[in-house]
Amino acid sequence: MILPSMTYSEIKAELKKEYKAMFAYADRLTHQNQYKREGLKHSEPITFKPVAWTSKGLNK
Image 1 (cartoon, rainbow, N blue to C red):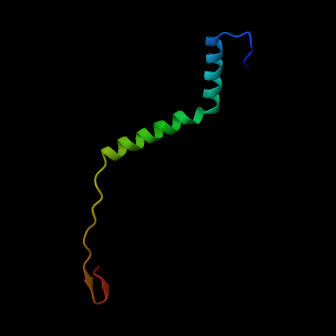
Image 2 (cartoon, rainbow, N blue to C red):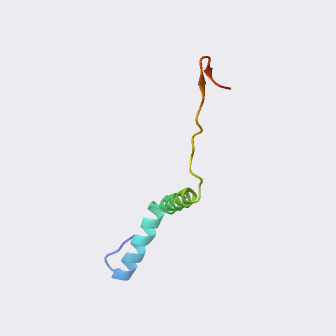
Image 3 (cartoon, rainbow, N blue to C red):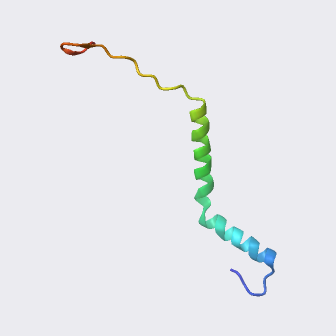
């Protein structure tokens, strides 16, 4: 709670606490996004194999 008698640094610390409480999930989201980016960097590219067609449909 911010009071008129508080100093600038106290108000700043109080706002920081409130902000962290409101956006506690934001750190987890950024961590997940970073994990996904790192995973994509080291993943193998997706390749599609050609499929041979016959008169009956797909060649099994």
